[in-house]
Each structure stands twice: as C-alpha cells, then as structure tokens.
Amino acid sequence: MCDHRQPAASGTDRLGNVALPRAAGGWLPALAAVTLFATPARAHGGPGITAGEVDAPTWLFLLAGGAVVAAALLLTSAVADRGLLAAYYGRRLSIPAGERLRERGDRVGGVVGLLGLAVVLAGGLAGPAEAARNVAVLLVWVLWWVGLAAGTYLVGDAWPAIDPFGRLAAALPTAGRRSLPGWGGRWPAVAGLLLLVWLEIVTGVSADPRQLVAVVAAYLAAALAGSLLFGRATWRRQLDPVAGVFELFGRVAPIQRTDDGLALTAPGAALARTDADATTRASEVGFVLALAWVTLFDGVVATPGWQSVAAPVVRAGLPGALTYFATILGGYGLLAGAYWLASAGARRLGGSYLSTSRVAAAFAPALVPLAAGYHFGHYLPYLLTQLPATVVVALDPLSPPSAPPVLGLPGWVGWIGPLAVLSGHLLAVWIAHVRAVELFTGSERSVRSGLPYVLVMTVYSIAALWALAQPTVQTPFV
Image (tube, rainbow, N blue to C red; front, side, top):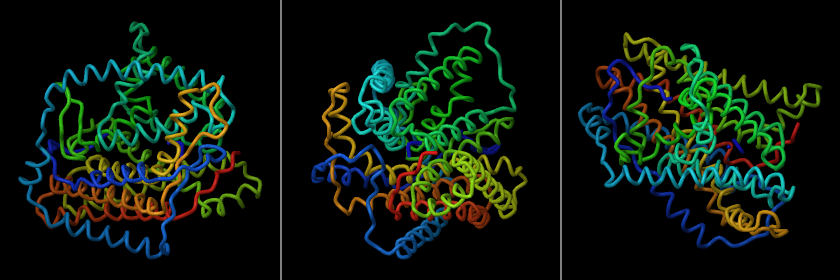
C-alpha cells in the first residue's frame, strides 16, 4: 500500500525450524551510514517515492540476481538433515521479563495508537492541503506503512499493541454477535487488501489529506461495525486486511509474542511452525498470495514500462479505474494459478499422498520474505528522505514550514534495494527447503519437490529487481 495466515503445513506440521542467514543485520550499518552522511535537500512537491538508481546495465543487474538465486538453491539443497533443521528452528529463547515488557508495551502502544489516529484525522482536515506539509499523509505513509511495517519484519510485530481501530472496537458491547460461515475463512480480508491497494493507486489517497482522512474514517467505521456484528476476534482474524499484513510480516521477525511474553527465534521460524485448518486452508494461502502480489504491483505501476502499457488502454476508452481494477484482479489470479500449479508439481515430484491444498498451505509462508524484501528495498529511500520532514511537520502540524527538510541520498543507496530483495529471496528459498524436508521423505525428493516453488520465487524476485532498476514515475490519478 502506499506505494503501502498463515498456512502451513501438513499432518506432521510441528516443524522445529531452521537457520537462515541474518540478512537484516547487514542493513543496519547501511541505515546508520545513510542517516549520518546524507546531505539535506529541499522537499519536493509531495511525498512520492524516490528510488535510488543502480549504476549498472539492467541485464547485468538481473543476471547477478539470477546468479544469487541459483546459489541459494544449491546451498539450501546441501542441508537435508531433518534433525539439524528441527533442532535449529525449534529453539526459542525467552526474553527475560518478556511478559512485563509486553504488557508495558501494550499500554504505551495503545496510547500512541489512539493519539496517532486522532492526529491523522484532525491534521488531515485542519492541516495544509499540500501532501509534503500535511501531518496525516506523512504519519500514515512514512511512519506507519514504511517505518512500522519495516520494523515489523526486521524486529517484531507491534501492531497488536498499537492498533487504534481494535482498541476502540474493544469498547463495544459483546452481546448478540453473529458468526461468519466457516468456509469463508480469510477471503473477506483478501478482498479488503486488494480493495485498499486499488484505492491507493486510482485515487489521491496517498497525496490528498482529505481523501486519506475519508479512507481512515471509513476503515474505522468498518472495524467498529465488523467487531460489533461478528466480534473483535473474528474481525481481526477473518475481516481485517491490515492486521493480516502485519501478522504475516511479524512472523519473519526474530522477536515473537508468546503466551509468556516475548521470545527470540531464528528469523522466519514462525513461518515454518504455523498450521492451517482444513476448512480455511485455501483462504490462508490466498491471503499470502494477495500480500505478495499487491506489494509488487504497487511498485510496478509506478514504472515507465507499466505506464507505456496502461496508457494506450486508457486512451482507447477503457476507464483508468477499471483498467487498474481488472489488472490487480487478473494479476492476482495469474499468481494464484501459477502457485497452485507449482503446488501440484511439488506434490508429484515429492511423491506425496498429501492433497495439493495441503502442500500449497505448507509452502505459502515462504513467500512472505519475498514481499518483505521488496517492501524494504522499494521504500527505504522514501523513508530516509521523508523522515526529517515528518518530524518537523509533526512538531507544528497546523503551521508547518513551507519547505520541510528532506535528505538527499548518496547514489550507493540504490544498491540496498537489490540486496534487500535478494536477502528476502534467500530466506524464502530456505524456508521452502525446510518445508520440503519436513513433508517429503528422502533428500532427493525434498530437493525436487521444492523446484516448482523456487521457479515461482525466482520469477517474483527478478520482477522485483526489474522494478527497482526502473525510474519511478507518478501514477496518474483516474
């Protein structure tokens, strides 16, 4: 989104998880360096995405990415010892005083979330109309969708503590609630996520404070109505696309919320330990695919390549909003079809008697690091350039300076994006390999069964690298 369940497994699905390279650790020094050495620049006319350019031919850029993809497959296939994988991913280190930390964090997060919601609603209505000077636009897109989302997959999921919509919904009466049909699963959340991203693309919600306030207010009304009719747990689990996104991103992180507080795990360990009920398995896979698709699509539509394809269609007479709506649904359908074909292929290559839907649910969590890696790579320049403006505007939201300060970034920052995408790919391939070793007998079958998924992941990663290599253009509002 501004740009912005877990399924898993089989009948033997208590994976004890496996080690992944801590790619995120390499990003922290880069972030620190950018913050220390970036030079100030004047703000541009609205908070658009500012992508770093990669000083290399696109073909060489993509070829290097393909080489890393191939190396990832070779390295992961060399580790096939079930005991080793289970022992590593099964480890969980409880954080001392984790329960107290979580309780305090929930209290502080609740205050921050409610205050932030109030500032967004008030600032969006009473603040300046210019996006780069409006506190609502900057808080939502810079601090929430970029900063908080990145912190979710790099550190841990704080959204359950911050979520102001859920806290307001919790104050509603609990009697007379209805129930959703069991087969519905998370399909309402899938539809909600696709709808939110479509609105972000075809309206001015990413740059018009008044439209943004309207969408936030509508989302609050939906949260209250959904919680009142079906209960807060049902709203959060089956209807709320935002909570679903943060939940999935949070399972990539090394810090996890537990019944006893907080725990330290291997990155991605929670993605390999989840299970999906048979009645909701397809919708769980559907939500993961929706997250992967909209994250990539939100960046692709801002490339000149996409504009050259979409513009003639719009000029031919098809409404722009309908064009984007058909594209987001059609692309989601293509990704879902490719994924289910890969699942059927993995089932055959692995010689498994498990159903295709169960195999699909087991491997779907491996796609989440792909979305996280692209999200980080695509939005990092935006976060770094707009963070000073966000702080300055937040200090005086009703009368901010005419040109809030932004940071000018050195050219090498453009390489952080590709590294983030490739790191997400490495983690995704590793998790898929863990799932294959758990589900299929024999090291050869385990390696073979993962090949269809690696193909899907490779196409996704190459598309993400291509999008990062393109200059960013403003998506025309329709």
